[in-house]
Length: 221
Length: 228
Image (cartoon, rainbow over all chains, first blue to last red):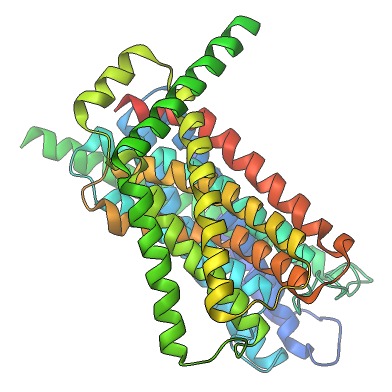
């Protein structure tokens, strides 16, 4: 029970996010209207994705320093959960864009960057599946994982700032600092980020334990 | 420290000499790629069915960079696949992995530069040349050659370890290279429109920064790749 406090915290934070996020008052703004609530679901997905991919990279580095099957499995599962968050982020973003920008996909630099980022990690999965030998697969995909993350950073954080974008926080559009004069959005936003990220960590935890057990069964067969 | 740098430098020079020498003796990769570039350009010319100067500027630019992208993926994919097992083992015993990756990057950059310049010449000859600021356009070609070779060399090292390496090469490299390609297209578009040179400064610096990141990461990671 002592070790599981963060799981309880995750559940509480997510319940708080969903209930308060759906029911609380939000600033009334033209065009945005109620879609501003997407801040509690769409934006935390990207925060969560970056943090979880960072976990994946850290475990890849750990693997290269000290090869062990556990590090490899965690890096792999974290990359998969990162992809899941990325897909959810893109879907929630497209849904939001349909109501505010008028199109699901309007060729915005942020959208394109997100799509390319996902492609990089799909390529990571393809690379993994093309090796039969386990140690070689683990090492080479760790190398690609680190390399891809280094390529992802300019894609997500530098390029969109150089071009005009419709996305809030870019190209002269106000980010959420301008909206929440009374900080009411922040009250829910920060718990939401924490909650979703913890949920991702929880999924990684369960999945990598399952995978480790599976490996052990294979060894004993 | 200084001694290590000196040794590394020597290794890089030797390995590059070896690559150029092999290329000169076999003339296999270079002639093949030259033919590849010229037939692609010619196919584009025929399939657009146009006389000279009839392509719009953005189309001309995008087509040029797409041809270069495919050429470089094909040319650089060979850099590790053409080495046979025995030679790789021999290198493994006498030189450091850092030397190998730096030598390959530099060699590929030279190869790409020559190919890109020839491609530009032929392309401009066949499809017309709407570029207004040619020195700036050449600069973007130079940065493109360096950028393609830095990121693709590492990817080709990764892909050469896998079973279906030619498919994997494309799948792994395209997403990684897109940010660079977008910057290059923008910069060369500025050069084509003859905008002021300071307008491209942002792109130029970003490209250099991306190149630095990629070279550093390759330098650090290649030893792990080399070991297998």
